[in-house]
Amino acid sequence: MTSRRLVVAFTALLAVVIAAGWPVYVHPQVDPLEPADAVVVLGGEPYARFHYGIDLAESGLAPEVVLSNSVGPDDVRMQQICDGDYSVTVSCFLPDPYSTKGEAEEIAALAEEKHWHHVIVVTYTPHLSRARFIVEQCFSGRVTMAANPTSQNIAEWAWSYVYQTAGYLKAALDSECTPTRTP
Image 1 (cartoon, rainbow, N blue to C red):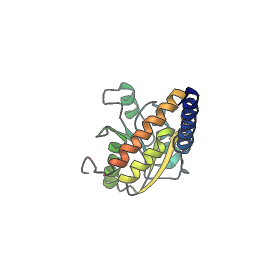
Image 2 (image 1 turned 60 degrees about the vertical axis):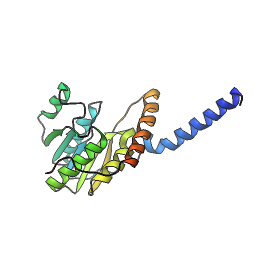
Image 3 (image 1 turned 45 degrees about the vertical axis):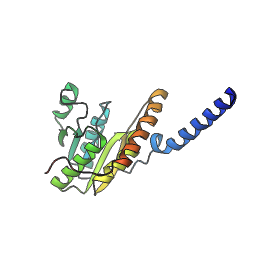
Image 4 (image 1 turned 30 degrees about the vertical axis):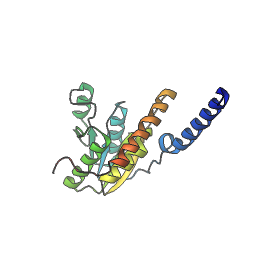
């Protein structure tokens, strides 16, 4: 195969990958926001998603916010967010395992404990579809997905495609949810 054919084949493959991932990673299904029992913000950086989730609840969408402290227990900035003064109840947890699945299992455990039937789950745009897939495997109630506005450069988008695709494959192979604690 000539180098020209290789370039054409690679370009065509890249176009297919981008087109296939566009509705999943770049423009995923975002649900209309309606009042819920709680807002749950999945972990990760940037920290703006945590404030976004708190703002949603404080706007009247939920009386409670639960933040996944996936950046670790020693993160000073996360501690400040968790200990902040808000008009709604805010609590934080460390996911176990440290993954979206661990977060989804915690959502299921909290829902059972607190009798939640509907949660708003906040994450960043490229993670939204995969997070929905995993949370809906673990939580039997209604899930509304909300994306914190995401600004990424081309390298970050490329990494998101690779990372989220690998995460989908892992979730498909490991779909059994078991809450990590008993309420």
